[in-house]
Image (cartoon, rainbow, N blue to C red; front, side, top):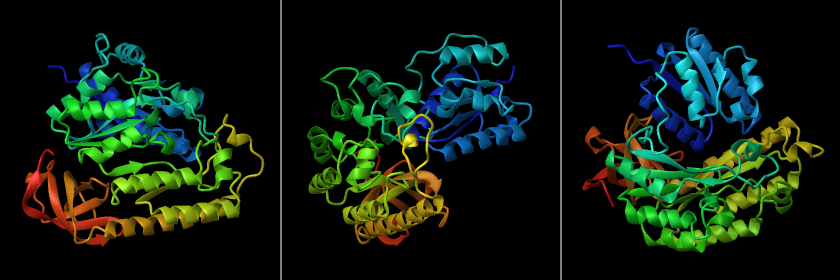
Length: 436
């Protein structure tokens, strides 16, 4: 029997990119190819790129060159956001055989058929078999595209207008993920809060969440990221009504200074953000709230940075993702005069990262002496070698003396210590379950 050609995918960037890669992997498998984690043995190597910052561009190009060095004989195809934005730049590396849109099924089929890797079968329907990265937690892309045009962001022309996956299709996929063992589903999108905008005035993110809770048996449902002005009363009511909806929100702040927010074309104020935090903590005071903060934006004065620093500390976030501003060609921010010297941006970044580490530790410490429900994963904690997983509020918990038989179960863990932002604890005897 002829051996199936192997394919390898290296993915950069956000969870949406990862979902796109999983969809492509599922499609390639349906065409008769076999996945591999080793680029050296693959007939086809795919690099899925990100272009949100200049650093992202550089990482993608380096990955292409590294893949060619690892396997000089492989067919190398590049996809993802940088591939959409600057195809010629990628082809100029001379390491690449083709640049393809990750959603262009016909293009992939034609490309692979011409090279004898597949037999030219028709592209499968959009309801292809789920291909999660692991059985425990699965990311499900429910939305793509954005029309907000934040002044620093290059994604709207790359990702296109907001587009939602039909509600029934999302339900079917989540149900099939439950069947193959997933205990948690994370809903993700380029602009998740716009879900349903292109479908009907009666369909929105809260509608999707409620439908999934009613029609599927998924034990835990989590949102990846949502804008502060899109957390509706309807969504908050669902959040407060069931523990299946996880106690964590990731809501990008970017800046705590109103003048900088206006320059960024962000449609909220610092007071709006304070009010959101208050509303969430009225429902559940122990909810984890993480955020993105951008430093070094062209209009960010020293006073504006200090204002942001104070707001971040006051709001007691559970986790920070800190980014230095990176000019992106074609964006409004790239045309702004002035600019922050790199050494100043680095100093601000270092201070914000230090604050984030302190806040994460403080948040984790509040659960010492308490019990958290933790979804145990197969990946072991690198420091202790113990099995670990995430609590509902997205605190990572390493579990002492946990054995492999509790992987992919939700265990009640008594937290007894914290190292950095990570809690440690012990499973309560007899206190484990697989569903809510």
